[in-house]
Length: 160
Image (cartoon, rainbow, N blue to C red; front, side):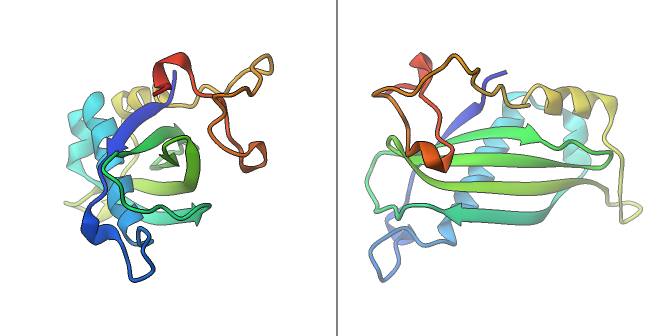
């Protein structure tokens, strides 16, 4: 399956005193994109309880406010019994500006304990596993970022 693509508008108030989008604004972008991804193939058992237990963001380039939305590519990896990771590549135009990962745990609020993923939830999560580019794909003029930063060429449907 291809990565899920979300577009997140920046707000003028996301900028800090240095004139670029503040690092804390990225958490809101990740949340907005993650919620969009899960409502794309909604499974109501996730609504019973899913908690964020960890965020990690690597900032690669500063982003300055402009009216065009950021493009976030999301996918799932590392599915375990009661948790999973969502990974993100955050693009400002064609520039890879940041990479992130969020660890989520399915949770039972009645018992106040983590719960195992259901079979239905695993099916949904597996549908978001990344489909890495094959070795026959080569970078060309549509390269999204520096190859050393883990970039991949844009698929035709993703090109703007």
